[in-house]
Structure formats: C-alpha cells, structure tokens
Amino acid sequence: MNRQLFEYHPTFAYRFIPGLKARVDHEGGGYLLRTNEQGFRCRHNFESEKPEDVYRVLLFGDSYTAGDGVSNKDRFGDVLETMIDGLEVYNFGLPGSGTDQQYLIYRELGASLEHDLIIIAVLVENIRRVMARMRPFVSDEGDDLILAKPYYELEDDGSLSLHNVPTPREPIPREQLDPDQRVYVDEGGRLAWLRQTVNAMGPRVKNLAQRLTRYQPLPEFDDPTGPDWLLMKAILVQWISELRRPDLTVPLLELAEELRTTQEESGEVSPYVYVMY
Image 1 (tube, rainbow, N blue to C red):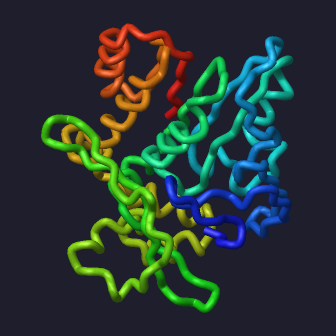
Image 2 (cartoon, helix red, strand yellow):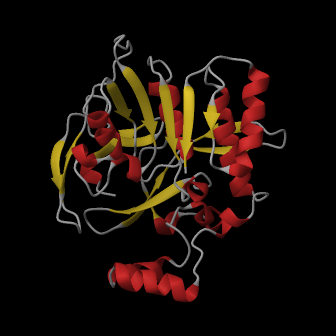
C-alpha cells in the first residue's frame, strides 16, 4: 500500500487523502488517481439528497472496485455511468479493505445518503481479511511495521462484537508483537515469500505454477462451517439486515438462504442490494 495516497481514519483505519490528484506508478505503465472531498476515488462528492432524475448507486468493495492499476474513468463504476443515462455511482471502494471495513464505511457514510441501489463487491480474499486484526507495511525508511485495523468477532449467541474502533493510530514494529497475535496479521495469504518470488517472474510463470501445483491460496473458503466462513456470513447478514427493502441477489450460495430469511423476517423496506462475487 502506498502510504502517500492514504491517511488515518478512526473508524475504518484509513482512507484516501481527500482532494488528491496524483499519477501512480504501476507495472501497467502508471495511472491517474483523483479523490473527492470525503477521501474516496469518486468523481462525485457525496451528497445526502438525490435529484429526482438521478438513479444513484452506492458501490462498496476493495481494490477491484477502487480501481488499482487504472485511471478513474476506466473503472467499471465510471464506465457504467457513461452507458446509462441518469446513473450516478458513488464509489466507496477502498484498496486492501475487508468486508468488515466496507460495512463500517456504509454505516458511517453511506446509510444516510439517498440512493436506489447498493452493490457489495465481495472479493474471495475478504474471507481472510475479515479474520485479520492487523496489516503489515514497510515504512519509507524500510522498517517492517504493523498497523491495526477494526475487526469483528462472532460471539456464541451469533451476534457480532466490534473491536479496534477507534482504530489505534500508531504502528508497532513487527518484533514487538506477542506471538499469539501474529496469527492475526494479514500477510496476503500462505507462503508469502514463495508467492512474492513467483509473482516477480511475471504472470505467465505465476499462472503455470498455479496450474501445476493446484495451489489453493484460500483453504478457508473450502469449509462453509469454518470460523472464517461463519464470520464473513455474519457480517453480510448483519449489513443486509440494516437495509430497508428485501430485494436481494446473492451468488454466494451458502449465504443465500439465510440472507433471504433475514430479509423476510425483518419485513422492512430497503434499497435493492446486489452482492457481487
């Protein structure tokens, strides 16, 4: 993560620097990045009231939604705006974030905005990110440091408890972590050193290595009864239960039945929600 693009946020740990205009170096040749007054890569400033002739979409996700690697105009949310008259997309994408942080962004910034549609773009890696309590980064001086992030725990009664809000601001050196805390650092998956080595050889070598080894970077995803799955499901169920209309499309099949049940039992009227996977 390029820390020159981000600043601390007490609720969801970080956001883009508001009002930023920058060119970001990238393996694809670099791209242009621009942020709004609220610190997100969106060409619109977030306004509470919606004009009658506008269909407003709130878009939540991580780097694929925020658009790492491409300029603002080339992201799927911006492209949709050019294809559909009257469409306005509020992009809340935050690179490296988990569904837990995206839910907190919705609660703090999105819930009060008039809108017609919510899209939750769920990357498979989020099943790991929601279990993490910290993330590593390398300082400008080359120090290996750890930053805290907000996180939820799933209690025995099925409820969620929120921790690390406000999120601790100051990083800590990795060597100062207690051994029992190191498991909660999001290292980006298993065998970090090996993945970095293979990635440095280019996409062709990476794809060949994955085919030959049948490497599964997210074994947690194979077990719908595991703690990672259950926490991810609970966050999505809680998020969707707070919305005000029961229409919902969920390609995450293991979640579909419980999410529909939650909507039916609530009996509330909410904006349409589409969960991308």
